[in-house]
Amino acid sequence: MIFTTCPPAARRRIVLRAAALAMGLALSGCAEFAQHPAAPASAATTTTTPVTAPAPAPAAPPQAAAPPSPPPILPYADAVMNAANTLLTSASEASRSPVKIPLIVDPLIDGMTGGQTLATQSMGEQLVRLVREKYPQFEVERFNAASVARQPFVLIGTLTPVNKQRQTTGQREAYRICLAMADLKTGKLVSKGLAFAQMQGVDATPTPFFREVPAWTEDPATLGYIRTCQGTKAGDPINALYVDRIVAAALISDAIDAYNAGRYRESLDLYVAAQRTPGGDQFRTYSGLYLAHLKLGQRDAAVQAFGQLVDYSLQTKRLAVKFLFRPGSTAFVQDPKVTGIYPVWIKEIAVRARNRDACLEVVGHTSPTGPEPLNQRLSLLRAEYIRDRLISDAPTLKNRTIANGVGSSATLVGTGKDDASDALDRRVEFKVVGC
Image (cartoon, rainbow, N blue to C red; front, side, top):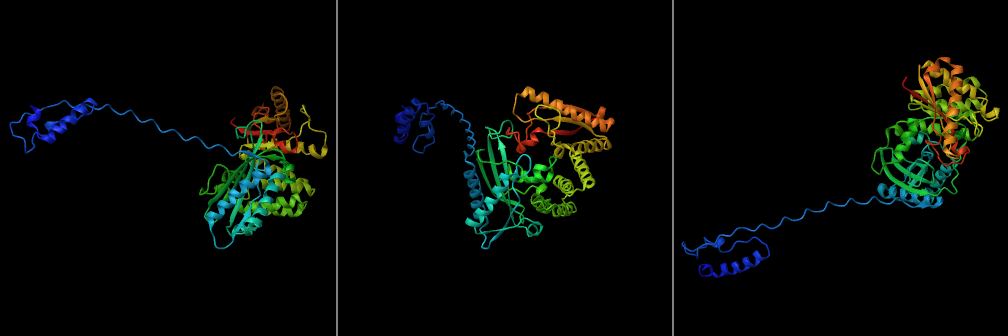
């Protein structure tokens, strides 16, 4: 009956519909042609219940892209060249200047301590040679106040000891090389270079100034340098802590070079100039004034500079002092040339803390060598010894100081060499705490 009342085309649709129904599809047959002009008004119509197609299965969530594998750990010389060529090639492509681009190199530093080492010094020299030999579009200029004022490109870099997981905790087993180039005119990073190096062949001995600096603190100028280099990418802004202090940093760099060369009078004059410069209120400035005065035999001026260093650090709430103890003992090493000044240091810390009504936590640290339970105990004993010395110089600190020992759980260097390269791991810290 349906076939006699539907036109041929409709019949074909019905056949197709039947096949579609068998496949679970929803189609209508002759009913969709009920108003077809060829069909009489009284023609029978067929009503069908639509078949709902099964809902499609939900799409699987997109798989997160696997994080890129970190660069391999290369021999030191290869790692330096790898990071340097990546940096310079990228900078060359990004700048495309028809004229030579002035470039200054702010001395490379250790990424944990902020100090300069023989390794960072030699790396900086390698970079300068590489630029002059293979990247003629850059014109290397001396890093000083005059060159900074012309707002050139500046190259910075850090060499940071890391553990197996490429983190700055625990026993270190490689070095992370981070290089960055920034344009002082635009205030933006131009390029980056990264590589990981084996520890063999890396001389992390501090240069003379940083080897003889009596203390350490988290200085904003150094933090700005490190933050500009690490955890950034091309196009990011230069960290304000760094760029706001770069003129003073250039004077300090010249002062450090003069000190390392034994030109102590020249070094002192440069530190005085840096102190008077906007941004010159830096830990390195007061450390340099202390060391230069001491080398020139100006003891009273040196003590005053050390006091300024203490005040600066107490303001930032952290001062780490490099006291050299005998192995396994709370007694200082028997070398008056080294430890003869320690009573002055302790007295200045005590008096300055007392005058500020500060409460202190005295924290002892050790290097990672030796059993950790012994390190914990030894670090506490050394902290208690220094605390007792503080109280003897300023009795009112008795109820405002506590002693604590953390062993090797908070190493800054973490190589376990127990020499001048990791002296800061055997420090005693004075932390300003709530009373």
